[in-house]
Image 1 (spheres, helix red, strand yellow):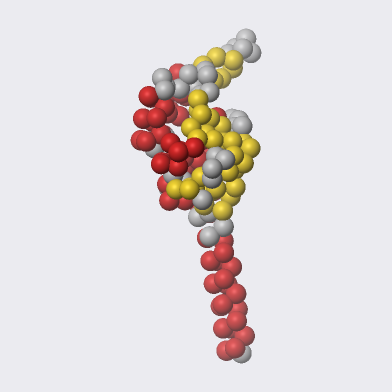
Image 2: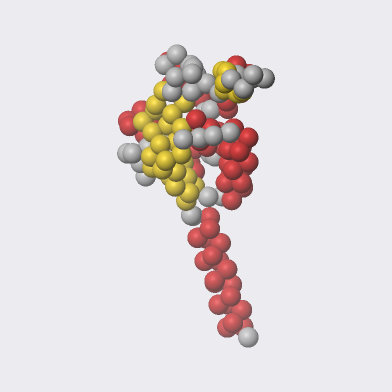
Length: 142
């Protein structure tokens, strides 16, 4: 019986270890509703998983930078982060830039990312892209 308990303990240790070291790959995420990404990234942060950004991560997807510690994120040479102002729909159904949501979004980004955004004119309706060497200076390459 002790032998069986030892094997079970080893299997559980292996399973727990592989869960903690697993990674979620982001490759072609154009974003979406901020609320959806808040929930998604809260779950991801609780799981202990890491993130590999290996392609486009735009709009609300970039909130991953706010949700996870920097040491849980790595970027490949194909990684590209797209930032723009937050928008919402008015009573008439037309989209408009939402200054309050934009400020909230901007203020959650890590300081190096905020500085990069500010040097490029801030969050506006036009998307700006962070990739290549500037991105790999902020986040570890993978």
